[in-house]
Image: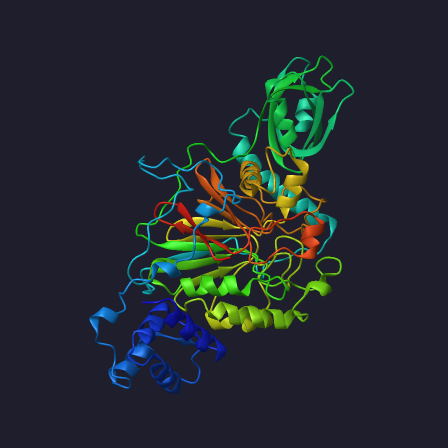
Length: 530
């Protein structure tokens, strides 16, 4: 079945304010007279219906309104024309894909993450009994922070308690106050938050760790092999150190350091059936550079047989361009009213098949507070985007899809990680490596008081308490993915061409890409629509 037929149907439904299930579009396109069938379906829809379902179409076709399509050569199983298949990223060397792909001809029990997944065949499963989607760590409606001193104390105590529990089993921990009273030459270990990192006149590194009882200085000698780890440290992250006290017990010489990290024994969960999820972010509707054509090609592709197994769409923030986010942004806006931006976004979202489950979190361009964690949208914005019945949760949130846990985080802290760490450990060209650092620290935004705005709450919602199977971010507008201790890390690019502001800060975006994850294997295929 040519792609143009369902694309025209989707476009017509969207223009009239309706969404549609993929199967409904397929059945309409398969009718003898799709236009007549569509009109009859719309005439007979219930007044409160926002989604055209397959049973609506079946009822019209059963009445013989257009005769129905009986020609087997024009059945709904007719494959898409090869010329309509979007190009893959194999001809785009600028895309960062983490590790090297498997050589042709090789076979492994699990293909590397960069290899393509199998082509979808058959219809999209819509039985709610078959699907499985759960949300955890959603703090929407749970914010209690008032900005008082006690709130800041509470969030850091919670961070130390959660991450400290992961570290104390590895070392013979002693609190800072107890270490101060131990005799010189003693072997000591401490778990705390990094309070300060500075170099000495001799080129060594002095790291001050803080716990609930006080602070204690640790000296990392410049000639030790693990000194390179100092380059990875951020203030306020949790760390464990082992070493030997100086003769006067005033400082400890570091012998080893430990991060909370993802255990090397981690084994990711996978779905027990072949089902896929599309991971995207940074749509930026309202910008003059929003790539509407690329989005429409993506949405049309979701209606094709090739995308039949894509049952979930996970969107990691920045649905709209926003207003006043950066200097002179108004000069680059196509839509200047924030609510009209969301209304336009909702119209584009309607082009996505109605039987695709959507989960969205906000980003720094969205109309929520900038400080993280960010709660999901208020009721007014939810109502604007209600046509697709998307799950709208906080940034970050853990979303478990078909038994596969996906940590969704917009990714503002990646700017800070990339700025603070050496280029070989974190860069915009390879954003997944910066994500590795957050996994290693088990916190999505460890440094307080820097570029990332953080809100004090009763507990630290930004701790990566449970190891995810997939870590999904956006924000930096670069595509990159790979695996860290068997956790699949994906930064999914954007749907916005380069703006003048991005040119001024040397950002060259990867736009119009949709990473598709096979949830039964965690293999990734990148579809390109730009």
